Image (tube, rainbow, N blue to C red; front, side, top):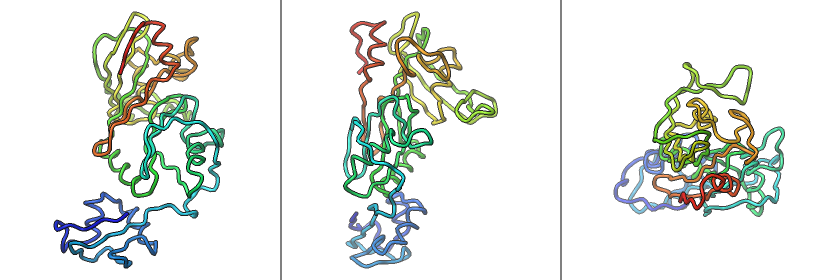
Length: 294
């Protein structure tokens, strides 16, 4: 990455430029300092306390090397739906029944495995900025280098990720609303969450798109990002997600929770949309003919 220093930063400290202008974390700067080619000014390795001059060429080496690669990440040829990709970012419309990360029971069938295969011709490090439950479909953002991972994580922390989901819930919801109810992990379990007074603050907004007595199709925006937040909040207000085998019951019409991360806007980066998958489309059409969400 090459950057030409402009008049605004003439005479200013390089470290200030990296933290304030480039939004680099202390961790990222520390890792760059360790590399011989990590931080260069006009082709020479420098300390971060030097003063910049207008016209200086700053080079930052944020490429991945073989030493960075997880040797246990198996490259697996799994079909995936790419929404957008460039040298910095890959946006995937993750299918249901695909975990995001490897785990004890999932060594070769995850999004991480699929992307490792896609980028098998270069050193690849899987960096998911957001994650979805295994059976929640939709948009997952991954960064293709350390710099953009740092950049996106800062945006996520600052609330610059605007996430919208489509959820199909039981019962009729006629008006928009919100759920503000703290969430915590249930005792004696790793997976389950519940609304509890001493839980973490959690806020979810929802808007009905179409409804009947049996189901409602919602547009849902989680303002916070707690584990299972939408699933827990919908159960809490008496409208659990159809097919959710953790917080509801299984459905004969869909084999997983009817929840899809369909839109993500990242301020200053872009807006990305993942169309509703076939299983949710078929479920909606059981109740509403000729519908159109997008």
